[in-house]
Length: 194
Image 1 (tube, rainbow, N blue to C red):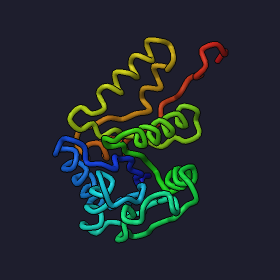
Image 2: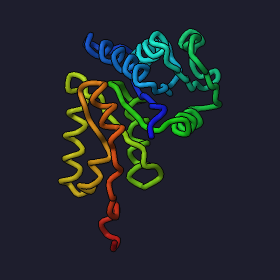
Image 3: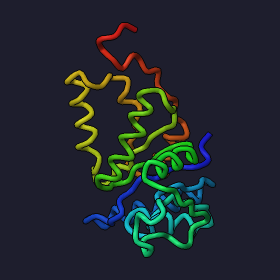
């Protein structure tokens, strides 16, 4: 059962107005669905847009921010709860511990790093939580194409493609995450027998 969704998102708004609109819609949908938001704790970028809409619609937003890592003006001061941690590793661990599912919005290196860690951990069986991509304006199409390429090249098992759920609209994506059943994952290592 999903109670909290961890959202990975850009600390900038990006170049398409639709990124911001969809981030706001995701925040509204999280609150409307009675879910809680867990995220990086910033007030700027797509991260801030999601949190603001969750709060505006009566939802709970939990931010996790390393102490002293970011300038004080980036910390969202209106959150339901702000958890200060010592570093980025503890931040990601805390966000994971608090969450039942993940959604990645468009973003940069930080968003990719967070996304790939949770996908890698799912592949290894460390967790079985659903992971969604909000594929706004086809933002994640190159990534999905790359995953297909890695499957063809023999680095990712076909079944492991199911570890990611993709959608273009917040409501539909949240429903997919709620209905998600973790796939039966065969041996990740081709050279080892089943």
